[in-house]
Image (tube, rainbow, N blue to C red):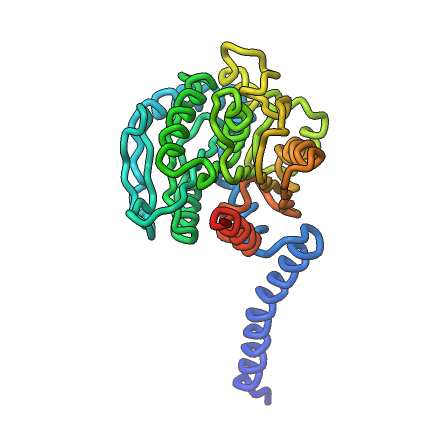
Length: 337
């Protein structure tokens, strides 16, 4: 006679074994793809999946969705900005009117001896995300610098000329307080493009270059005319050239889209100082970011290129091992005497 109790135990053991082995096998496969195919951490692969599910890429790739996005941002961008609810920052933060622009000051103390002007990205259409807030907070805490985070004018209501005027006024004020050699000018995405185009103007404004210029995934050609852009776009889970080019037209109002004011890839670079460029190989800004770096390095200026192999747009801002290494490099540059 069959012992059903023994059979049950045997099947239960098999089921339990499968229940344990299946997720372990799935995780092993996931790790193999992350490291073997994309040459990145599991966290970075998980981040890309998250971006595919939650990003604004559809709004930048679909004509109707893009038009609605513009209308939405036209209203949102004219309102004062608040620190996102439920966001806990480790440094102090206050909002002030600095030379006519709402500006957030992080880590303002009597003992500050250096400053960071951080121009957030967002395709010239969007206010800072939680990731940009957290990144600014980390830089402030790790460097003990005062971080200035201006809410500069954005499209579609405003254009490059208004943004440049805002940044110029703020830079003059911060340089007056700290001295240009104690300032790091930094930006990500569209903000990084604005940072380098402004830095190219400093000589003409009779202002000194900042100590460091740190560019994270910079958008440096408003036209995205590089023939390699389409190839990189196919791997990018966050950005779409269709919408970005339309934003570029709005941003360039009043000047040619090849003007260095909006496309600093076309500007002079010999006057720049201590430039760091970060770009992921799975973002459509990569080809122009690398091209800008190559042009700067060819002049003999001290420049560094930090390639995020298998990584996405703005990879230093996200909670991954690769970002931690990038932040270490940024902190070292800002604190360098």
